[in-house]
Length: 119
Image (cartoon, rainbow, N blue to C red; front, side):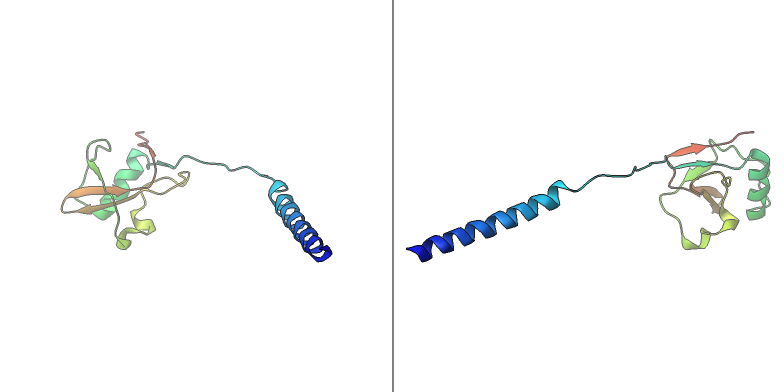
C-alpha cells in the first residue's frame, strides 16, 4: 500500500513540476519593441527628368501624359530590373520600373501609393 502512495506522490510531483515549468515559460514571455509599417510608395521623376530618361529608351517619344500614357504591368522581366529602367526618385521607398514594348509604355512597382510628380 505504501508503494502505491509513493508512486502516486511521485506522479503528482512530476505533474506539478511539468505544469510549473510550462507555466513559467508561457507566462514570462514579454512583447517588447515596436513594429513600424511604412506604406509602399513611389514618386515618379519630375516631368522633364521623366521625359529625358524616356527618350533614352525611345527617341521618337517627345511627350508623355503620366496619367493616360502609362500601363501598369502585373510582373516584370529580369531584363528591366536595373537602374536604366528606374523612373522613380531616390526618395521613393520602392522603385518604379518603366519600359516600352510594341509602342506601349509599361511600368511596374509594388507601391500602393504612386505620386506622379507632375512638375
